[in-house]
Amino acid sequence: PSDAGKGNDYQDWVGDTAVDKIYKIDIFGNILSAFALSSYPVQTPVGIEYRDLRSTELSSSAPNSIALDGNSNIWVSLFDTVSCIKIDGNTGNIMSIAYPAVTNLVFALSSTYTLPELSGFAGENSLLPASIDTDYENNLWVAYTHPVSNFLVKYDTYGTILTAVPLASLISPVEIVVDRDEFVWVTALNNLVSPPNINDRNDFVYKYDKYGVLVPGYPVDGFKLVGNITVDGNQNAYVSNSTNTITRIDAKTGATTSFIAGSGFNGTNYICDIGGIAGDTSDYLWVINNFDNKLYYFDLLSNSTPSVLSSTYLDLTFPPDNDPTNPVSAFTDKLFQAYGDWNGARWINKYMVPYTVTRYVS
Image (tube, rainbow, N blue to C red; front, side, top):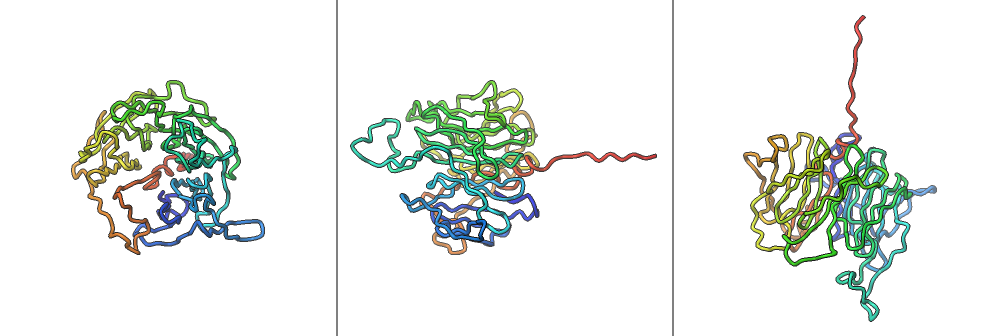
């Protein structure tokens, strides 16, 4: 996410799963800080201690989702260690750790490995934090995804559990976003039925209030391989699904409107083109399309159906493999992925409170 908060420096935090590091970079791409999760500074009552935050079974931590709170401190979910850490935005030291009050299981191949819903998950943890976000009160929301452990958890700023919301078995969360009104939006794959064709899927978008109560009329169904989600200035949600489709969900009515995000060259019927979406404070929607390597942007205020702007896209190119100046590892599959708050719009949407100044003349 981009630090549009305290200090207004717009410096960016990046988690690199391949090398188990967290980077802070400036707007010019210069690396300001690099933290190895194998030896991470942790703030304790007696001073700074360096701890190995990697999973002992998997020898990795896999940072996979990052969110800023109202004080511009950073929460990072560690996929392989099933925990979330809160990092001081100035020093980089760990301030809090959030861990679900559920016993974690590490599944391994064996003769007793017979549960059909666990097919394809051998050797993995049963607690997998898929996505995180913070709310206006600086609480942390975490969506956990796994065939046998799907739930939404709300922690306070110190990592204490406040609310836990179970999801049905095989309903697996993908991404989460909290809007300005403290509603929690969650995209979730419906793995009760897993058809081979993307067009035959029926996935969900959930919406909860600040207490974890499902909003009437939700979940909304009918999505095809649902994925990334963001909100605009009016708290409408935008969801990637199908191969190259964005669907808008009206915050007040729940009505949906869909439009195409890029042409792409996706010849499959089981992969989504889109690798990330984000809204900005001018109500433009930015979309990464992995199959044509372009960053599209849409004018959300243009009409009832968002339209592609003239000069519709920016070409995306990969850095050379093993480029030492590139803080993010080169991926062999050459896919662009992005989560969360690219340009600070989510932070501004939640934490920047509008106010009116009244002057009296006597």
